[in-house]
Image (cartoon, rainbow, N blue to C red; front, top):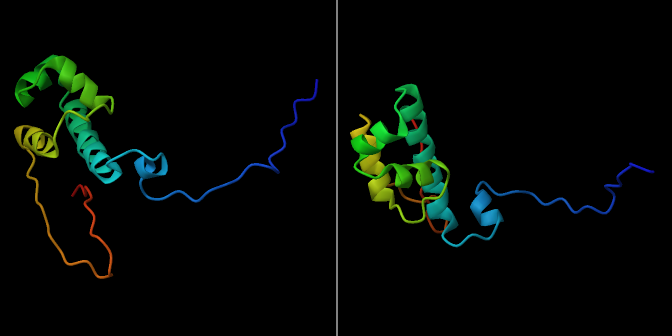
Length: 113
């Protein structure tokens, strides 16, 4: 049996900075922002050694809803709710609006300081 694999016919495509856009997901920019917010929420919960049940109580949501969010299923959770979660976990969230330097639409990103 020949186990060699030929990579000669594999097309390689440059990825963007947004995997959701690369996959053709609707609202890709929104999903990327939510992923960044969820990642930060998860890191805080882990660092504080909170159970999901205790964290859910602090965040004002059910444990199953928190579990879904932490697993990347956050379509039913608004960015506003996620920012509120970060506030409840003792984090300040700053929103900075700046002018775009090129003639294109602006974008939103999560930057953790």
